[in-house]
Image 1: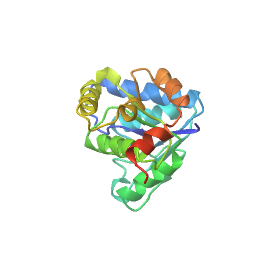
Image 2: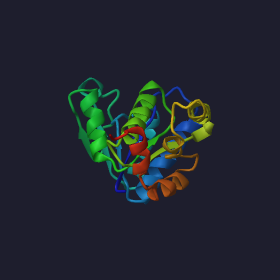
Image 3: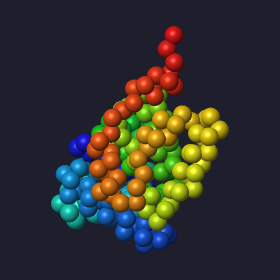
Amino acid sequence: MKSICIFCGSSDAVHSDYTSAARTMGIALAERGLRLIYGGGKTGLMGAVANGVLEAGGEVTGVIIPSMNTKALAHDGLTLMEVPPNMHARKARMYELADGFIALPGGFGTMDELFETITWGQIGNHAKPIGLLSAKDYYIPLLAAMDHAVKEGFVFKEHRDSLFVDSEPNKLLDAMAGYIHSHDAVKRWMKEE
């Protein structure tokens, strides 16, 4: 892996433990020589993860849409900022640039990006590792919902098991570095005739 796309919240109205975890994640990326690919913002966890990477001497590529590319929202100290025309193009560009994906705590946008990425891997659109940094146990309820979906037959266990989860950035990155995509899991979902 040479780059990691981070999905995370942009709200400043969150517990400082979340922003601290985002900054620590950014430092871990930089120390491993991994480029950060993210939404280009300077607020909330988005700003914290980017600042962590930059403070540790790493590289950051922001990918932001025109309506969010403002002084109030956009980070102006990045290595590179790309401005695709809309959200669909933004997501596609982030997926193209990244070798793996991690969701830090966030809201609906983060959940949207996380589940789309999981779904794309599930159907074979990519073979890249996906992780959750469950800072402050943020993702415990979501993981319980995923496990319930497996129990009820809506999600195959191997798809659920392909999602890496940890509260420590380096442990999460170590697990993701050893990822081997399950082509059998894709075939199970996409039955061939």
